[in-house]
Picture 1: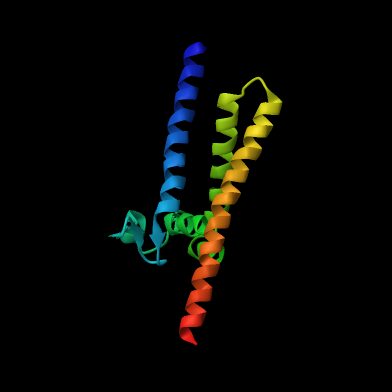
Picture 2: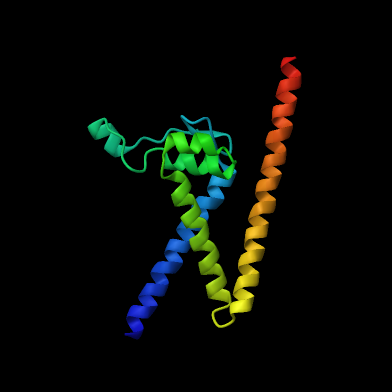
Length: 145
């Protein structure tokens, strides 16, 4: 029984690392809704399922959707893949709950405080993105006049 618990914890840690890396990468990367750009390098991602069948799979547009959500372009994310918002929110909630559980297993107050702190950090990060988007729109509207 103890081995099963250790294997379960190992699987959760691996999943955590993969999802954390995905979320972090979505903040660093950018997209024009056709291609993904990572550190100014264009990445042409092809879906093997779509290439073989000509039909979109359930995860087509998910990467570009997550990048758009990280940059608070929610409409674009919704049009790329309807599940991108739900999967992104579930991933964030998994990361926050796993982090707080790992560090504060036996103390509910500390877990709530840590969860609140992580949410505040996320909101501060997004507020910076909102500010940059507003400045960019203001600059582009002034430049077109």
